[in-house]
Image 1 (cartoon, rainbow, N blue to C red):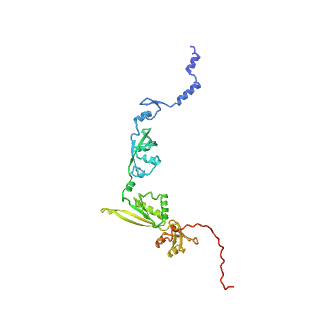
Image 2: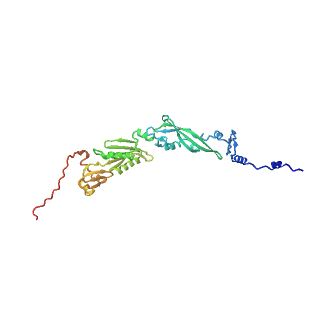
Image 3: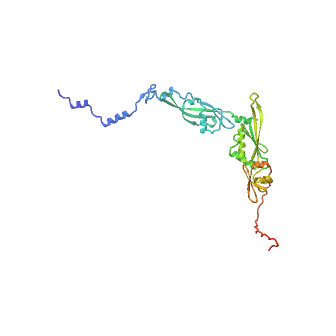
Length: 355
């Protein structure tokens, strides 16, 4: 038998692939494996449920359990927002604090994982706040679905408890009465500026002006004690407390009281001329009886106009033996200096009789 031709032998044995064929085969192997969606037959990458994203969203709605419209109450009197637990918070519009408050409102939001939250612009007069939320949830084993939707908050009007007590009459629990019995209240005006600077009046539900001072009304006794402690730290004061029984329960023996804190400021202001009693001058430090008030803080700072010697008058020392200012700033007279003549020091005359 004759041997087969060489060409036939080469075809049976096979030839080595060329460089172009090798590159093509590598590209085919690098491509990910594709399958068809079991619902709509769209080519997708393999996943745990072998379904595309659109079919998953049609079959599983992870945002169905979240409320899309929520009622949010605000107070017209103080512009505060009501929390879910019934308390009130003072926050700015479109702030992080307001966003945190609003995210606790929708029901069902805790059942999904919150990924992102942002404000959606609305008309200022529409009384609406819109948030765009992005959530995730595992629908089946190994398949996590992400969805975005908008939650609308309808702003309603509701009066908070503080504003209700402010509008009503005789609903306060404690009052702090601040008084200074002088004609010119320089120290009292200075204390008013300190109260505004340190925001010591924020807890007051009402402030009423009286003849010799102000009355601060509070809904809690601790707030009045806080104001009294603040005044003692910045000004020379003394205070008295009293309480009045409003109602009582005969079964438990518990009663409801109204507390009054009467705070009185020293009747001494900066620039007053003082004639100290002899005992007070000795207690302060054997100073002259005629002194000037140089400064008023939680104590009274005095200065001797002749020797420039300073002294400190404690409030307790003043209340033991009270006295009034000899002269005030209203008694001062303004002079214009036209000329100054310097006199030479006079020589001391010697006594007669000596050598």
